Length: 202
Image (cartoon, rainbow, N blue to C red; front, side, top):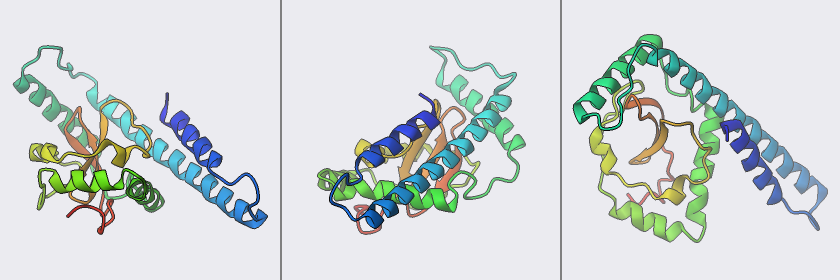
């Protein structure tokens, strides 16, 4: 299923949550406008992700991807070569290239939602007991620090976010949301203050 198809499914699910009866017409209309705007925002996110994926495919041309059974050194060398090619093609990345202000606002809302659900307590406990990852310098187009892999992320925390294509992942580091290209071990974009300050367990 493509990102756009997943986005459409998310919007249909959101539509199903709108009150069907006994709600003032104006309230229904306002919520419908909000859902429609969220749909457009998710479509914009999908386009930005797809643009990055196309750039990465060009950067992969001529590189031999590691095969099953490749050594850790061979995988690391491939990641470094791919990251170098991506940086050569993506010379002036800036915050918000993927997480634009409207996308950032929607993602913060989607990430905050699980804290208000029945899973909220479990999420807070998991974050409190996670291996602490603090004071890491994260840079767009930079290498993702391997120590950050120690930060466990409760699956339900990111369950409402749009699904990503292969080799792209969400990671939580402190309160930041990282969009990671795992094939290149490269940070595509960063969303500061993605987790609510009062709910992050910090």
